[in-house]
Image (cartoon, rainbow, N blue to C red):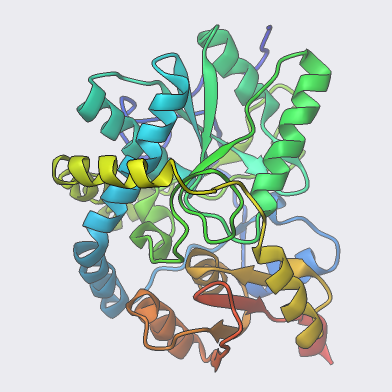
Length: 373
């Protein structure tokens, strides 16, 4: 299959042995806007991928909390990485390309690659590419990978699931790719946590805190969210992103990877036990989260399910880069939501006890129309 996309450029702070980003470097462009302006644009028909939020840099107290949570949950993350990594290797073997969905999927893909390398002495290629809700996957990136690795299977990787929007987007994108190019792609999505029951390749279905969800680019190789704006992205380009070099002194991306990586040898036996039990469980996707989301939409009179972001990871994102309205929380005392309480207090966002929730918490986005009244 011919690919007209350019050769990838080095972007971000990860080692290229860990991941190759298939992204166009837009670092020289001014793409950022305030969260309020972006929210107005998105809620009036604009698309989130056409601009970038200003990168929120949390106070020292919050960063200190990140390190404490990493120390507390590094073994749990390592175990979940091992569980999903071994499933991938058992299902697809050595001729597999890991394809992370930038940017939350990137550190997860690196850790899966590292785990398989350590446990099975097999080095799988790993790329990070862009997928955009309602606009699909970067087809130039997919074609590039297929050209470089003929005969390999692709395994898509992300951090966690919420209500399943990206899982559904991936399925649709794979179907469209097959129709256009006659190449079948496996649309399964491998994640650390699947509280939304959106995939059968997961480390756990518990809605727990994955520490990398707590920060933005500083735990993702200093790479921005991906950009798909026709003013900057040509027909043959990869989707774009920025490299925030100015944040180098705050970057913890590689330290995060190494911290989890050091836990791998200790979880090998536990991974085997979990997978032995898992083989007897029913684990097919059921997208259970969407029922909860629709119930919340009706109860809180929200115009779209896009205004509702369930799960610890998605709630954190709402607080870090959207205009939050309320946080619904099933268990206010859970250790997995300490950082959410801290962010909500800082931003003056109400935390509402809400027992009837499949997830641990859920972020609701503020209607900009209500603000303007």
